[in-house]
Image 1 (tube, helix red, strand yellow):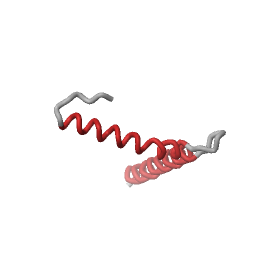
Image 2 (cartoon, rainbow, N blue to C red):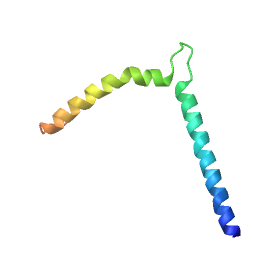
Image 3 (cartoon, rainbow, N blue to C red):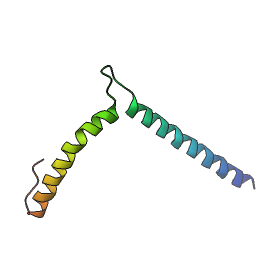
Image 4 (tube, rainbow, N blue to C red):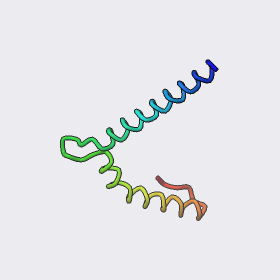
Length: 69
């Protein structure tokens, strides 16, 4: 019975650590810099470019060429 309590405590601690990590990650991504732009805003701006590059690479692979990244 004592061992079961330890495992339950470890589960609580593990979940608490995961929750803290998620909170800090979201806080980092949404923190505004001096220009008022967050990391998440930068990712949103660059996503279309990344999608276009991924489509080009996919087309190259399908055509049997080595992708030029």
